[in-house]
Length: 322
Ligand SMILES: [Zn+2]
Image (tube, rainbow, N blue to C red; front, top):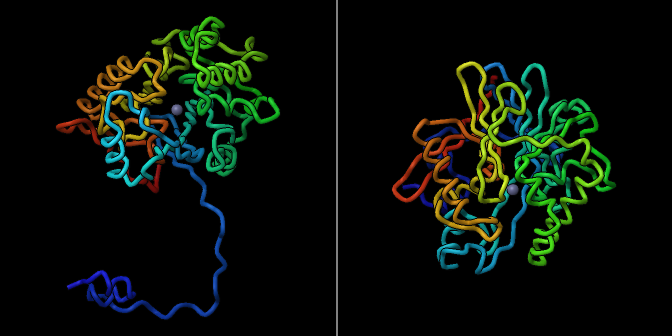
């Protein structure tokens, strides 16, 4: 019988009847002491996609975080997902789409302005061999800071200096309206002010798209309101393959796919967010579509299965070849 003590004692090989490991090499290898790059590359038809990790934020949460569930249920969902008891794991993954004609970035990461453990997009772009100046188009799903702050650096300079910036028209209309800012609660006012910091002095470089339109050949925008009024997802098609970019339809799937009815405090309209989530997830599960979510665990890409109570995210297998 394999006991925990025997495994911990380092006799796992013997316990499993395997030959003992060879003696270690005499020279000690110094630890690398830095993380490996967060890059995952895959293809959709003739498009080459690069998922780029921007890091993770452990968002502190309190009893009002889910508006329509008792906090004890939320705590047990976090425990079931091996998250800290009072923090929601919130990873960030941006997506580069190379259509062969254009290099397109969907959402821009935190710009290193949300948490010390996030802001690695620049390093990962460099590791992927992509210069920020080579990006032709930046497309934004919605105006929360973790999606738009990477448009600019801390000195307010554009990071993707040659890129056109495309944003959802309903998102612009809601957040750039001063009447909405004035009516907002104090903490939400910070969000409104952050959007003005990012967009006010570059408004003429920003193109607003109507949801449902293509932002580039093969990339169709789909309205997905609730999380924010103009929240948008993207259907990417090339050849006979497709990918649904779910943006923030659900945040971490171990919490929000398993509990699709949960309305989070950060949803502008929780009931509409839930209806949108179920509609898109039902379609993705029924059609066995490949999906990616901005706050899904890296590389953020996989499938959704419908379960008795919600959905389960099944991550892709890492492919060593394209
Ligand atoms: Zn987000």
